[in-house]
Image (cartoon, rainbow, N blue to C red; front, side):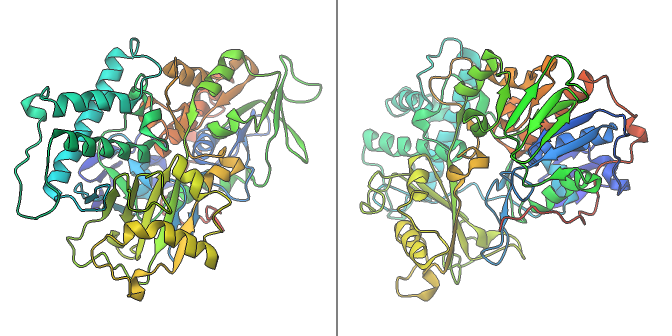
Length: 557
C-alpha cells in the first residue's frame, strides 16, 4: 500500500484523504507530553484498557480530568493482541482496517508508520468437490454476491419495520437466487457467462449454478463471526461498513496501540491485573467518598464517574455486576444483541510454496467441502490469506485461515491439543491439509509443504473477551438500533457510561474504528455530565507521540 503524509494535518491512504483535525491526533504531531488533572478535578474510572478505554482516557486527560484505568489482563489492548510465536509479529485479534473514508484508524496508522496491504479482488474459488473454478466465472459470481449484499443492506434500511425478525440474510439470498437463476434478474445483474478454454468447471444448468452461488453466500460468515443463516436481514443495515477499501495491517496493530496508549501510560493511570467485578452507585456520595464504587478482588476504588468498556460478551455473562441492577431496558439490550465467534489459525511453512511470481493470488476460498469427510463432515466453509504477499519485512510463509461459528467451536474444543505442541501441530495440519494441498505448487513429498509451526486463537475460551470475538446481529432481534442507542446513552443519573465496538456508530459496529469512536463519545458524555472541561484543550499539554517511540505491553505472550 502506498501512503503519504502531507504535513498539513491530513493523510492519504489508497488515494483516500483523511483529515487529522477532530480525530484527537493532530496535536500529537507537535508534542510529546500529556497532562494529569489537578487534585480537585473529577476522577473518572475506565474499565478496560482496550482501544475504547485508551481513547476515552486520552480525551479526558486532554480536558484536565483525573483518570484511572482498570485492566483485568496483564497487558493493554483487550482484543487487540499481537504474538511473536512465528518469529514475526501476527495479530491474534483484528487484522483489518475496514474502510478508509473518515476512519480514525487511518491517520493513527500513519502516525505509527504502519504497513497496510490491499489484497487483490480476484479470489480463486474451489467448489465443493475441490475443483478450481474458472477465474472469470468465480469473479462473476463473487461480483454478483456483493451486488446482492448491497441490495440486502438497502432493503434492510428501507423495509426493516416490515421484515420478520426471524428472516435471515441466507433466506433473502435464496429468494434472490430464484430471481437471478430463474430468469427474473435484470440485464445489469446477469453474469457474463462467456467461457474460456481453461477446461475448468463449466455450467451444466441453472440449478447447479444456483447451488454454487448459494455456497458462496456462506463467505459472509467470515465477516460476522457466525453463519449467514443466523444473520438478521431486518437489521442487516447495522453491518454497513465505512466506505473505502479493506486494508490488512501487515505490521500488526501493536504500533498503533502503543501510540494510542501514550497519554495514559505517560500519566501512569493504567492498573493492570485489576479486574473490576462490581460497580455500586448511590444517588448521593458515600460518606467521605466519591459517588461510584468499583470493586476488584483485592480492593475497592471510588470514582466520580465510570466508563465500562468490557466486551458485550462480558456484559451478557455478568462478568461485572451492577448495584443496583442495570435498568430493565439496558438489560434487554445486552440480552438481545448477539456475540460472534471468529477464530484464526496461522499455518506457517518453511517456504511459501503457493507463490511462484508476483501475480500469484493472495487469498483463497473453499466452498462447503465434501472432500474432507473425516475432519470436516459438516462441510464448513474455509478461506485463507497469504502472508507471503505482505511487504517486507512483514512477509512470511504463512497462511491465515479464518473460521467461525461451529467450526471455531470445534477447533477450540478439548479434542485439539494446544497448537504449540507436536500433537497439536499434527491435528491442525490434518484438519487444514485438504485445503492448502489444493494450492498451486503443493507437493506432498516436499518438506516445504509441511507446516512447521501453527498459532491458533481461542477467543471463545477467553473470559475477558466475553468468550467470543465481537458483536453481531442475529435473527430474532426485534429492536436492534434502539438496543445500541440505549447502551450508548448510558445511565447519567448514576454516572455509568458504556463504550466498545458494540456501542459504536452504525458504520463502526464490530470494528476497531467503532471502538475508537465509542470511547471518544463516552468521554464527551462524561465531560458534559460533570460540567465541561477542567481546562481548555488549547492549554492541555497534548495527546500522542508522533514518532510512536513509547513502549507498552501490547504483546501477548
